[in-house]
Length: 246
Length: 321
Image (cartoon, rainbow over all chains, first blue to last red; front, side, top):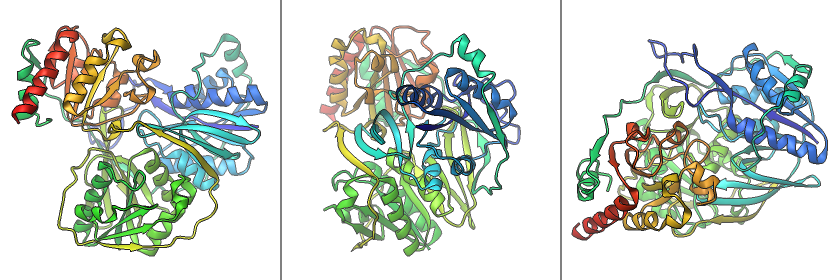
């Protein structure tokens, strides 16, 4: 089976977030970037697990500039076979989905995997958009996936529970926690990653329909009000009268 | 011109998120001077309830094919209704299914889409600015949607459902559908509790509880308040609590009116999933716990003494109100 895993680069969760003085752009200077955890821990490792079990090939796809090759090499070190980078700045979910779809159309992938969302914009839209561009079924929030021939049984997270479904390849699936066990690249993987093929392709023309107009910083939280642990009536009173939460 | 709001339901019953979506759509429709049309796929006996929140027209296709969620079948159906009714704005709930449909519809209808909107958009002429929380709550992004058709999925607890005089008409429609490629085998949900993304009150506990056998006091507090229970990642990983209770970056992101965090230190990954809560109470024995910095109210001390005391205070309060 041929697997395509779409990966993104995101600021580390602990990164300090700031914007330009006109609030039009995100300040990326000094920000530590990582491979989006959902893409790495769950989607990529699941594809590698399936390949180990069933045979085939795992290709990584990233939409991004040259800098992104660092996270692509990390994916190769974890165990992907080859990679493709679509050479443009990722600006929106739709643009990223469109670019990946243009590439995927020319190949025949049995399964396309990606994380359930990126941890920066939490859009959770690329998978559905990609599936629509490719006219494929899409399963979101997969937390378990087993193959039987060309039919996958997938458990997906829904509000307050799980849904179990069946779908035949080819399809697109987004991965949530539970899908696979995180793998740390070992020295051999890191050495081998250096010689794996990383193709660079030019983007197709695309016009965006929704773009960031400006950013705001969240409202400063007023400092915490400490309550005497002996006096929970006071906490209840504040929650009722001041916070109007109960 | 119209605003189309797609309504999710569970075996014909509407949840609070459905009424939030109708209220949101109806307010925008009024501002745009157009009608608010609610669409329900699958049978329901409660259709006219949607009129209580401002829907002018309620469309329903009760075909049994919709008891099986296949995003292709669903999005084709919604797109057809949107086209038939000249919808230039589609509103969905920002749920696991809602986000999937928003993505598919945006490609199908060449519509700019923003998921997770947290308040009403700013409308000027044909342009619309929609805001959402980004970077784990450390920023707000304001997007301009430029396309003729626009799609917004609404984050839960972002607007209060508002009742209005019901003038809605209910209409049965037939939608041609293709054979689904996805077959749903089973759906398991917790009965009797409000799912976390929809809960207004959440009581959450972490490693400070020392073991799953101690969760009785958390359940007592939650039940006294009518709250939903949640937990931190280490607790879910250790299988002290079920996976679906895990809130935080890798779990569920929530924004309840009140979040009570008990014995949770407040790592950034946890805060990322809960820091949009309107009011946060932190109970922790460690005065240096980072969570206190994100809290509105803090109680520093032994949770095994404080939680039962709080439960009693809530019960006393409920009796006198």
